[in-house]
Figure 1 (cartoon, rainbow, N blue to C red):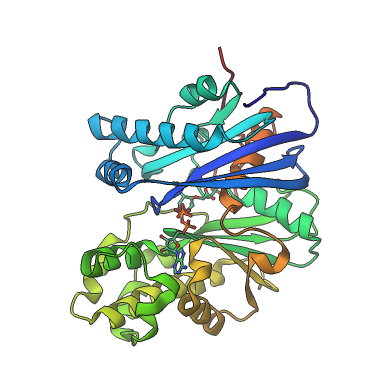
Figure 2 (figure 1 turned 30 degrees about the horizontal axis):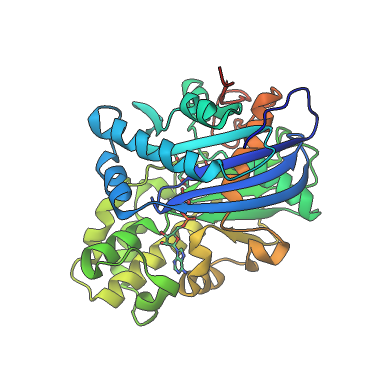
Length: 368
Ligand SMILES: Nc1ncnc2c1ncn2[C@@H]1O[C@H](COP(=O)(O)OP(=O)(O)OP(=O)(O)O)[C@@H](O)[C@H]1O
Ligand SMILES: CC(=O)N[C@H]1[C@@H]2OC[C@@H](O2)[C@@H](O)[C@@H]1O[C@H](C)C(=O)O
């Protein structure tokens, strides 16, 4: 059973993330005061059933209505399922499921109601992390960068590095760990690099009835079609100055660029597009990173990792190489951010989301 505590300086926070891949819910505990990471705790994963995934897929791109409500219910149930298995939790950080993201237009939409979770878990819940940032002119994403800064400190780094998350969409955080705090000028620069695994997943589903290209097995036998890659890189998104963010389906038409190709060549080309998006992003960084730490499911794809190693001019390693868990980094990030919100500390700033001023985005709901 979850237990709420107040007046703490060190919190045992539980974070949960349901990412753009729609595979399931990651949940992880972290001990923190909202600045320093003291300890990483236990974690769990709750996969969506195929019926649940179908409900979520149907609601993608929607801002409300029947499908979005059904998706919210799936998200809430799955989260309660997995989160009730943790003990002695002070605070829950609940990201929810992004259905639509259009920061310069209709805003950003994450479903799953934090009030439902607070009641079911009898714990304070921090949720709706992105809305405040978007309202203040920010991209509302990425939000993990302040946590990446804390990770760089936890590792004990001194020189500029990058964290690269390869989920459905890719996002990168450049960090100068010699700065004392993430809100300090020059400490961070972050943005979405482009599509990551989502297009390959879509191709696998469409052609082979698979959910993803496990270990890059299909792409491994393919040849990259350079014409398609060039057309992809001509997209204005890549030259846009960051911060900038993407919706899962912003590049969904790129599958058309590989329509005529064999399964292997199409998978290789879409995988190369992910790596090329990251490489194009490097031009925007304040200085060359000494290392790139890769997190998210894409790090398990050796074809993608090799493409990154060839195109980036620095060592590319998985976050496991520095003692972190690449399956749980996003869940840990929302645990960490929840404590920052509870303590009134900012969670994003001009160099991570482009928001006008530092903002602590998130709503705190206590059980009734
Ligand atoms: N063993 C593997 N081989 C190849 N690809 C993999 C492997 N494991 C996971 N992936 C890819 O990683 C994806 C899941 O990554 P992750 O869990 O980081 O995404 P997410 O958190 O849902 O997305 P986002 O970070 O965009 O919100 C899968 O959909 C798949 O494409
Ligand atoms: C709107 C939204 O949910 N964006 C996600 C998505 O998934 C990856 C990338 O696009 C990133 O910008 C963000 O998630 C991570 C956790 C973030 O906010 O840092």
